[in-house]
Length: 180
Image 1: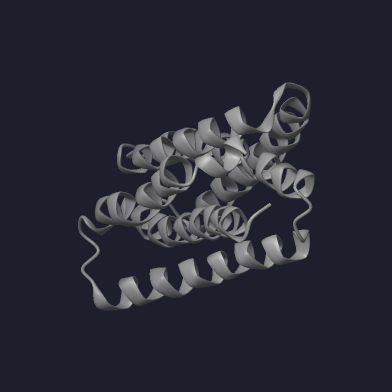
Image 2 (image 1 turned 90 degrees about the vertical axis):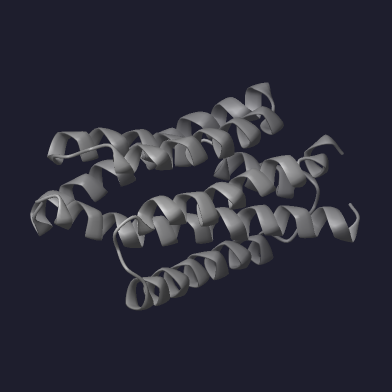
C-alpha cells in the first residue's frame, strides 16, 4: 500500500471523528434551548451510544461477509445526511429519534474502515491515534466556536461547513483508496 493511500485512510478517520464532536458540542446547546433538561439529554446520549454500538457490531460483521467499501461509502453518506435532522426536532422524542438514527448511521462505517486498514497491513494503533486526534480537534474547534460565535443558526452552519464536507471529502475525494 502506498503512502498516499495510507494518508487517505487516516484522513477519513480523522475528519469523520472531528466532525462528529463539533456537531455534538452544539447539539447539547440546541437541546437546552428547546427546553430539554440535563437528564433528558443524558438519556438521549445513552440511546444514541447504544444505537452506535449495535449498529457498529451488526454492520461490521455484515461488511466482513459482503465487502467493506459499500459500508464505508454508505455509512459516511448516511451519517452526513443524518446530522441535518438535528435542526428539525422541537421536543424530547424528536431529538431521541434523530440521535438514534444518527447513532445507527455513525455505526455503519468505522469497523469497515478499520477492516480495510487491517487487510492492507496498516498499523491499527496509528489509525486509532488519528481518530483520537480527530475527536480532540473537534472538541477544541467546537469549544472555540461556542465561545466566539453567536449560537443562532450556528448549528446549521457547522453542519454544512464541518461534518458534511469532512464526510463528503472522505468518501468522494478519497474513495479511490477503497478501490485498490
